[in-house]
Length: 300
Image (cartoon, rainbow, N blue to C red; front, side):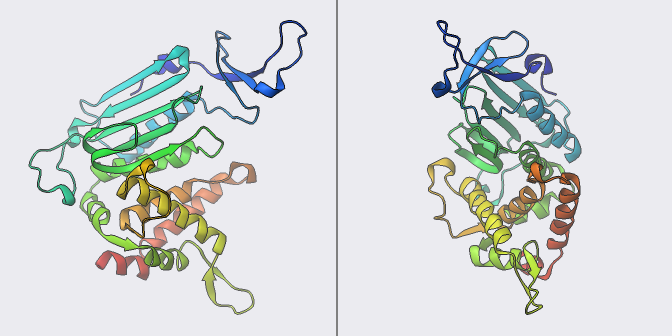
């Protein structure tokens, strides 16, 4: 799919020294260089943890493969700039050319689903990726059409390759799987925040209170899910990076679903048992989709 020859390198941090004394320039941070050529490409904070390009591309390609999307005549473009400091990926899937979603029914023509992603080691490009059906897009997070999934953020340890890949997989499912019409219905079915709170309280974030023995919300988990839900609404329903966080009072079943699936794959790797945790969370998402709360929202 993507050209691995262009990303066949890794980067590492190295200390900065003064030519005169050989002492470390601690105030400046550390250098970032390619391990193959030893060429410096950036200066970063010592706490910065680089994500290798190959790990990102592996995750994206795996998401494409497991989604079952038809790659016939698909176009994949891999662009590396500034000696490896920047990476851009683009993909188009002509086999799934289709009309955009209901809110754009006024248009008669079909569009080709596209995937775009940018990242960089020198932090000049944020982690910025989108998959969707559009006539035009730009990396300021806005599109003329339908954005199905996104990632946007600075280069920190919070960028989760698995979580991003899972979002992308769901958007590929959106344009390819047999249940596409159901997913398209989810995209336009409104869900207000109170309904999302009720949904997550009675499914993913539910726990039993040991004092009252009643089912209540795990407030930490619920807060995390609602933050993801708000971000999904901001980027998929709203104005993306141009919109202030937390001003949107409603989303859709699709943004609730994307929030749940991202939560299921975004696991703290420092706490061990990552695979088991993911499997358990994915099982809870499946149960959410057949819960009375979800069915009620879907029927509406």
